[in-house]
Image (cartoon, rainbow, N blue to C red):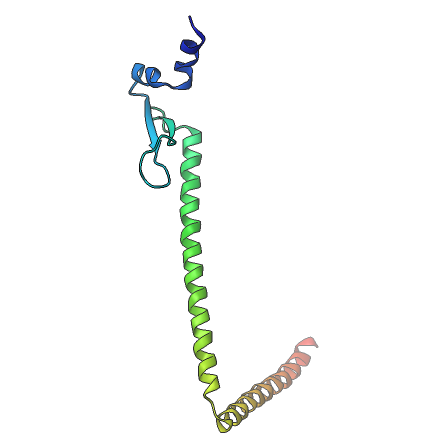
Length: 135
């Protein structure tokens, strides 16, 4: 018995695959160009027992990878849209006249005064009702 014959079937050579073709399949990964090249990787895939914990964990990891890739795509899209929105707003802001800016500031001051007045009035009614409930 030679060293190569004892090592050959254990490494998954074609003799080992031919001996039990139902359990083993050879997957050849193509080179970067898409063609099968002499440098292509050869992996033996066990098709008979594909429900092993290792295969299940690989499947789960692939699902997680797909979800993360989809999430990344969604976030990139949202970021791109936000940047476009910001550019449009800046462009519109540059086109405002001084009168427009004064009007915007007056509207802001009015809204702030209304909010402040409402908060103060709400605070007085709460304090009077709060003191009566404490007794």
